[in-house]
Structure formats: structure tokens, C-alpha cells
Amino acid sequence: MEKIKIYRSIKLQEAPEPEIELVHLDEKTGIKINAAQLLAQYQLNNGDIVLVCDEDCPYEEQLHFVLLRQNKIIDHLVYGGIYTPGIYKEISHESDTLRFTFASDDVLTLALRTTPSRWGDKLPPGARHQGGWFQEHYLTLKIQGTASDKTQ
Image (cartoon, rainbow, N blue to C red; front, top):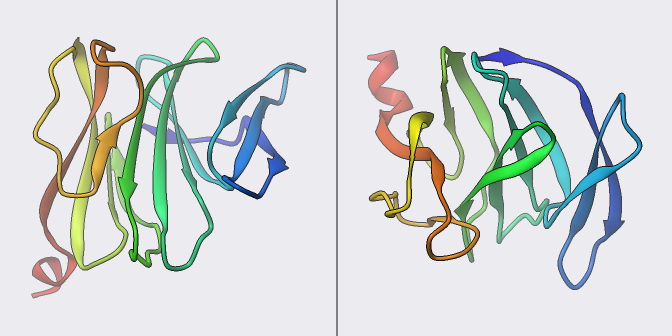
């Protein structure tokens, strides 16, 4: 996983729900996502791209992890919720995993499956996949301890 900057965001609307369009720097067409801002972009070993977006709402913050393949959304995972203030802080990114903290001291790991699953994974509280019932899911999210565990 490598940090990149190949998409830019254009704000489309702020209310009732935020929406941005993510435009690849080499193309004129974009991808619409219900989020307020693009926080980070990563290219995976297989060429897929993970975008990290948020809704920029201090007390009801949500992170959006959007997996793109050939400029098309193939998975979308949302984490956060009502009365959840949070700030995305990357801890590390290697291979096909991203470690970060958000609304607590919990270290979360976002990983890419090699083969998709149509059955829902056991996700942490506040996490859910966007899309239909039988959509294939490539992204997984797990709590891997706390940031204070790493400093002791």
C-alpha cells in the first residue's frame, strides 16, 4: 500500500447530506460519494485504490473507505456514527493493510481480502458496508488493540 495523490475532490453539496465528486487527475468524469472531504488515498499492490473520506461533522463523524478498481467503486465501508466525535489518524500502511485510530484509543486495521465475500464479516460496532444485500465485499475492518498498548 502506497500513499498517492491522484484524485481531487469537488464539493457538490453540504446539506442535507454532504456529497463530493472525486475526479481522477487524468480524467474529466468523477465518482460521487456521500462525504464532505477526501482525507487520504492509497494504491494497493494489485493496483486498486482505497480512498479515505469523512463527513466533516464534529459530533456525528463517519469515515468512508471506498475501494476503487479501474475508477469504479467495488466496495464501500463506513465507520462511525451518531454522537461520535472522531479524527482520522494514520498509524501505518503496509502491504494491503492500513492501521489507524479514529474516535477512541482503539487501533483499527482496514485490510483487503484476496477473494471477495458476499456474507457480512463481523465488523466492529459502528461499521457497515454500503450497497446491496449480496454485493461482494473486499474490505474488512478489525480492532487490533489500543494505541496506548503500543507505547508501553
